[in-house]
Length: 195
Image (cartoon, rainbow, N blue to C red; front, side):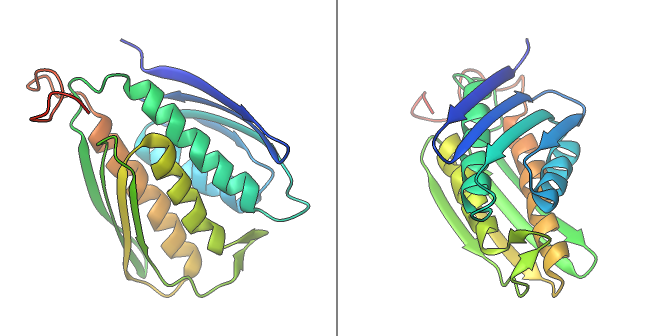
């Protein structure tokens, strides 16, 4: 059973098309107009083993904010749609990812209830042309779009590039874990019977 979806969103600030296959091999084609953001999404796809195509036209002449935040929202919506009724999914995912000096924890629950916590010290103001303050906005948008509970915590690290890259990879690994089908689960993994 394919868990493939295509999501689109068009506003005065961004035009976004995302194609996602949850059960992929990490193939990707990413074009957001922001080089560093492309690099992060490529790592997200590869390490989460998601097949991912992202095409964005955004108002990057203003700054990266709308492009990055809106991409997070639409990517979250793609996950929500691909998960369908969430029958059989593991639901929870967590990973502690090292990247050189950086160590980042990501933990999440595809609960249908949005909550977002972010604890990090990003010392550099920008990475390439992308302002580092929008990293938080991306993950908040992702949590909102997916209807998930997401915690990200920097446990160690000085190099901002390493810290941010560790975040994207840790969240990807966590989402892969949480979205996997476990044949032992009958229905959804909840005493309520619904997620």
